Length: 292
Image 1 (cartoon, rainbow, N blue to C red):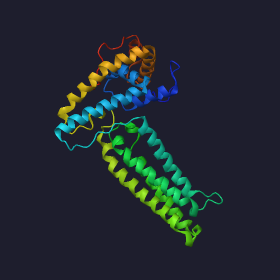
Image 2: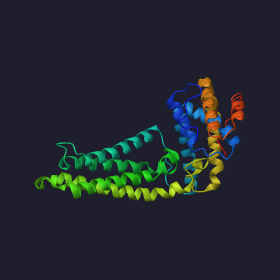
Image 3: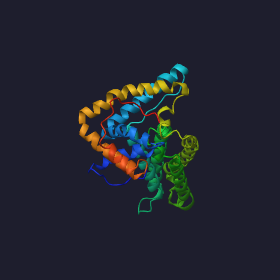
Image 4: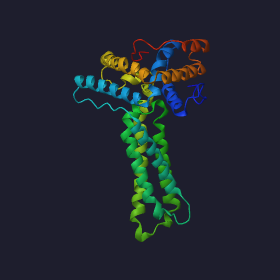
């Protein structure tokens, strides 16, 4: 998204701008008309973070219901919330901490002391990544900004750290107290291998193209013939949520929409004159889910 990282044209706060950029990054609009039609929805979702989570829950519930009619044993549809995104941040923080602990050269912090906590951090990190994988795979966690290759990076770093400790620093280990560092090294290696498997599994999702655009809405369907029903359910939610957002703070939604239009113009998805003219348009009379 070419508008990403540009300053606000209305003095909007950075957190809201970040939400706008996140929503637009994977929008994949086929043309300017589709982008303009979606601008009000983007503005409403970016204005209130809770709206995005609510929409994802409605989508997940609708997909789950139609899937269960097709197959009662269908896999659960897992939406992502701010809680899950926070867990993702913790997972990567633990991944970095594991490498830092395993490779530290500070006086007194030998592998005898640091390997076990490093292994525990890596194990907890990869466990979180496995737990979050279904949400990452369907694009609800962070879209295409979170490719499976990040798991590969974590795995390789853990295995490299383990190799350095085993081959170059194992002399720091007290042979009479080797249980803890050995357990830590085992956890570090096992976590690295698990991360490599997670990367291999996640590549198919990344290649599917279903983590962006309108495909993300119906990616979890087991039968594409149910797509109209899911979209109808989302239409019903938008018919209430869209006008309600304008009632709560219409001035903010309109201000955020100006930012959306500015970024669409910067990305050359919408011509600048057309984006300026769109600022004068009234909100939609009937709010519906995006179709293209």
